[in-house]
Length: 110
Image (cartoon, rainbow, N blue to C red; front, side):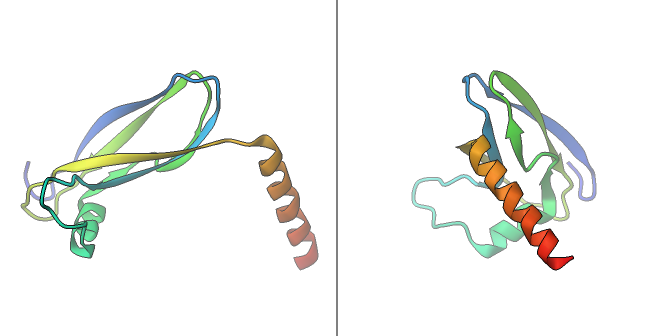
């Protein structure tokens, strides 16, 4: 890879369950034995050099989503990254309550 060269690879996230999930994706450095916690410098480097075209959203039951991982290096360095997937069950009733609250807030502000 060259600095300022852009490349895109794909990973596929599968939901083999019968439950719909809301997911959030995050890239971080892999923790190797004896290494300290991720530093702000590492986080900044990841944000400057990598991006995801799907960072959060809903993945339906028994479905999959392709995630584009875009690499656009701004400096020469080694990366050993992990993509964390944080998933929570999509709750229709909670979502309806939140939508009603947002609608009521809009009416108050109007």
